[in-house]
Amino acid sequence: MSDKHQIAVLPGDGIGPEVVREGLKILSAVAEKFCISFDLQEGIIGGAAIDKYGKPLPQSSLDLAKNADAVVLGAVGGPKWENLDYRIRPERALLGLRNRLELYANLRPAKVFSTLIDASSLKKEVIENTNIMIVRELVGGIYFGKPKGVEKLEDGNEKGVNTLVYTTPEIKRIAKIAFEVASKRKKKVLSVDKANVLESTELWRKVVTKVHADYQDIELSHMYVDNCAMQLVKDPKQFDVIVTTNMFGDILSDEAAMLTGSIGMLPSASLGGNNGMYEPIHGSAPDIAGRDIANPIATIMSIAMMFKYSFGVDEASEVIESAVEKILQNGYRTKDIMDNSGKLVGTKEMGDLILKEIQEA
Ligand code: NAD
Image (cartoon, rainbow, N blue to C red; front, side, top):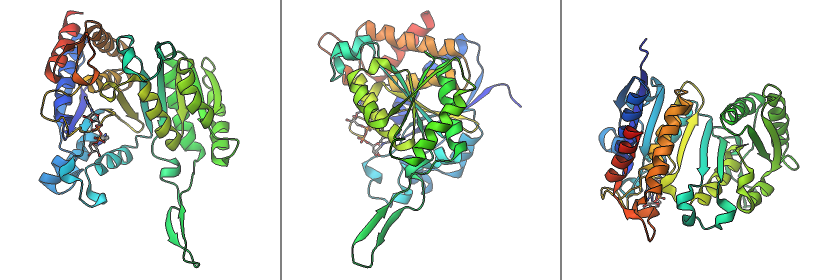
């Protein structure tokens, strides 16, 4: 077996290939700096795969991802494929990958860069120094629980049903990830539930508390989801790691993302099974594709997460984060984060600037 890290690259559609190209530049430079060997193999996914193979996740790309230690993904989708049947739309590839790779934990950091503080819609004093990691359960809960669906009733009305289900093993494994992640941060985990009303999240609270017994150096607290939604905009600095269910995490992570200002800045990691998947949280942005104006920082920060969570080289991750901060401090901005005093650069130039900073660090 090779001691090289196997990395599958799935650039996808729209700005996906443009931002992934910049991410790979950074990957090579950092790997060289830290003497990390890797093999890259590229696969086709999303709309591009529909055009070539008639389906969004061809077996060859799935196999590539399954056999890799880590997957770097751009984004999928676009107007060209919008009218296709839901079952073969580009976005189905993402669900397929998450399920088949058993990526049950989605990590979304929401970090406010001091240089971009004015990009947020919230007051500077509320958001400065905010650095939150949301750990969202990704393959269970109400989005998957059965029974589900809409049925006709005898009286002619209809009934829509979704079921919130969690089992002990599902909660245990996500709780462990949250405590592990917190051990590399400020050692604080907040578990978010609705245990006062929903029995399945009463179990959630019980199991998370039990798992905590193995992580005594981590501080654990609990909060109801409605309070957490309010606290996120009132005082986001109080949070370190937030662990929560699939639907609560879906909503809270979007709320937290907006604290930081731009979607082009936010990375993500999906962990679980045997490998990790790293991708920006944004989509394929067809409105700006092919114009060299997309912000590549979300993808570059996703590469930083890969070094930390898949390869365990925290310093490599820190080098990337510092280089990004430095370039922002020096005033360089892509269009989405441009301000009055910024120096406007394109996708490629932003990648080159961060690359140079890393090489010279
Ligand atoms: P989007 O995230 O692609 O774009 C939303 C807005 O943000 C657009 O104005 C876009 O120009 C801007 N934007 C996004 N990323 C940017 C970046 N890196 N730099 C600068 N600006 C950026 O969301 P959308 O427009 O709702 O969806 C477009 C397509 O992407 C759809 O087909 C959708 O289904 C798909 N999508 C895919 C993913 C994914 O692959 N993970 C996620 C969300 C949406």
